[in-house]
Amino acid sequence: MEVENLIYPPNKPLERVLLQSEEPVLYDYLSIVDVNDKGEFILGCSNVSGGYWESSLFFYNNDTAALSNEYSSYFRGTASISDAILIPNTTKILLAEDTLSLKLVDTTNSPSLLKCEDFLFTNALVQQLAAWHTNKKIVGCADTQVTIWNASNGLELLAEFKNIHTDVIKSVSVNKTDNNLFATASMDKQACVWDDRMKQPAAVLYQNHFCGLTSVAWNPRCSQQIVIGSKAGELYNIDVRQPKEFLTYHHCFDSPIHRLKFNELGNLAMCGDRTEVMIFNCEENFNLLHKANKHSSYVRGIAWLENVLYSCGFDKHIIKHVF
Image 1 (spheres, rainbow, N blue to C red):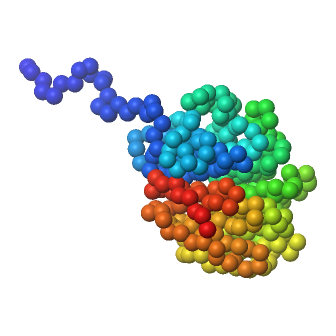
Image 2 (image 1 turned 45 degrees about the horizontal axis):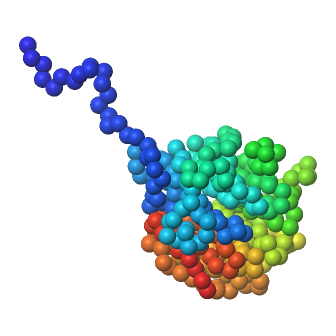
Image 3 (image 1 turned 120 degrees about the vertical axis):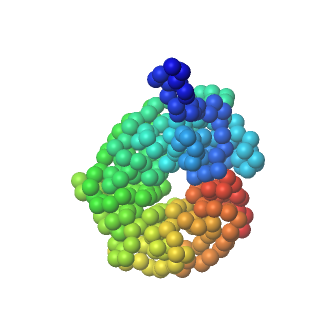
């Protein structure tokens, strides 16, 4: 008797075999851009709509190469990227993946394909990374935990702080004039300022009574000023000497603020779950210096090179903002 639709061999899987990319791919979902003092760029993107949630991280020698995607080297990841930074005054990149892994990559160890030099596993998804400029210390936030690493010789765990916040910590920012101070913003509606030398390292800087806090930035020009962004699209200007009260306030839009970043002149760049990019002077009030709506989807990454801002988003574009 003839059997129709016979599968040979009997245990052969019916699923289509999906192979990971062998070459770096510039995916539509650009989420990370960073630049160092030498003008070197990294651009991170992830494939979040395909069979594999893989990622590409590109390294560029200058902004011209970054804008035209003429990369000098690249790193291919087997998971999507949650954040990545160029570690100041080094040739290293630290990137966090959605598989709860933290990878240290050296840009000098290969002319093309960058390789992982060291890695650690974290307890939760790293939301954001930040680095001090002088001592190769990096701080990251994951779930309700804050972790500090040393990247001088591989990745060394220095400290872990758990359960200070009661909900997911969305953002972390360092004080560039003090290698022990940093700030966090959490969905528990609180922002905290930290000193990792203290037995009780965190103190509440500001508490919002209406919604969670999604981003924080410490002004490098004025070490007393911290700006906090909320899920409702609001900015709060806080003086660390007068905690729990904001000095000034600005409503940007009716969507969560995703990233805040100061340049060395004290100008603040902001992006959120919108297509706009805004730049403010925050010396007194939030004075709008520049507003652009050049992206066609959410803006995810912002980075300063002196007084020029670069942004990337889910539209596969990196845009240069001169104002």
